[in-house]
Amino acid sequence: MSRLQRPRSERELRARNDSAWLLPTDGTRTNHRLRDDMRRFDDTDEVDLVVVGAGAGGSVLTQRLARAGWRVVCLDAGPFWDPDADWVSDERGAHTLYWTDPRQIGGSDPVPMGSNNSGRGVGGSMVHYAGYTPRFHPSDFSVLTDDGVGADWPIAYSDLRPYYEAIEQEMPVAGQDWPWGDPHSYPHSPHPVGGNGEIFQRGALAAGIETRVGPVAIANGRFGHRPHCIYRGFCLQGCKVNAKASPLITHVPDALAHGAEIRPDSMVTRVVVDDDSGRATGVTYLRRGREHFQRARAVAVAGYSIETPRLLLLSATERYAAGLGNEHDQLGRYLMVQGAPQTSGRFEDEIRAYKAPPPEVSSEQFYETDPTKPYRRGWSIQNVSPLPITWAEHVVAQGHWGAPLREYLRDFVHWATIGALCEFLPQPDNRVTLADEKDRHGLPIAHFSYSQCDNDRLLTKAATEAMETILKAAGASEVMTIDRYAHLVGGARMAARAEDGVVDADHRVFGIPNLYVVDGSVLPTQGSANPALTIMALAARAADRLATQARRGLTEHQAVRA
Image (cartoon, rainbow, N blue to C red):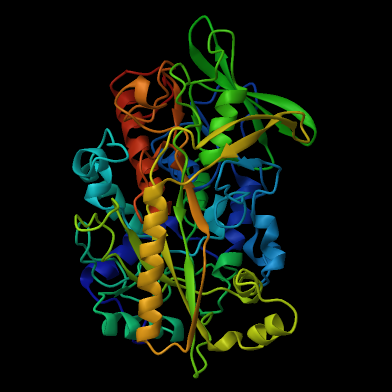
């Protein structure tokens, strides 16, 4: 075993063995063997649960409840990916991984829809995420109480801690011991740092900023039958070698092995609710040009922050005329994105920033509110590794074109890039509504209106200044910054009262006892952390809550084998 592959502790070795249930036994082809042999339910079968969406939330919920003995069908609008055959090491070729159906955007600061905030297919956006998996901080759950902005969650960080720990083991996550938020360690030791990360470390040290390596959901060494990361630089295009964890290669295979059905290419068009009983009875969906109805004792929507509010609005009935969970006009509101400016610096030496996982080194030194500053909350910093097309967009945003643009592109390997994630605040008018325009199925598309507040702009300015300071301290001869957004959360937020949100602390939609939302749309605040790990932890907790309630007889899941 090489130095990089050696477990750093008995805990790490135990984690590799304990998580074996998540590992394919014969590589990626296992997905296809399981897909051919997986259990299939008829539309007329009344399953215990139908899950809408096979991304971070839906996949974990499906896997957990299948293990608990539930009869679960998970529907996804996109394909069941084969990493080896379907994905390519090419920026343009990765376009198929994104949700490209039409959407309208508006507001004073509209948010472009694309690769950094959408996904299509089994695994969702996690098949093309960077693999960066930090936790939220304890303060994220009490922002209103502590800082006078945003909202408080109806749960605490301590409610999620055991689920954070479990998902970190299952992925697994590699990184240095973490000093911020709730200090903790990770199952695997950190990856070696490439040129981009070394620049960040050098500049941060000179500027008095503390950094750590990781955390990334990329095993440091072989993990079961998953190979070591080979540092190809195409993490955002889907990891063809399966070193980077995503539900497609972790939780989905285990869900199938325990009797769940993953039904791809199935576009859910309505959650069907019986107005007399006030209960969900299943979902309608389109597959191969035909409409189907899947009966279910309960429904969980996990379509993420645009499609989840859209589906609940499209599911309006006479009794729920404004949409499901929208009695108090909360559905679709408080959508959030993170401000994600990126700053690049030019160095004489070749950096070759792509030769490593995109996020290698990070800092959460500025994550919490600084009472001496004119803004609330904060930001994190990570090194990022734009490939040539994305780098060209960065250069064009500075106004360069023609010969200067070509010169910057030829200079690509000399540039290092770091990026910030700024905690933009939830605002009620940042929301999803239904547009007049229709999609190819004849359904109203989503309209997403977004505007920044003054606090958002101050955070972006402060984060940009910090990143430029770091790169200049590292010796950059030139720096350039591009403003951008990353990650979507909110739109069906969790709250203690129906007047303040769409779902309760158990993810149950207010007013409909067997309808749940289990995805990033339930987040009341977003912190300065990438949301994937938190969404998965929430889904694992939701599954435990559902299974416990079923065992206590508080639901009608009579088929559950506790």
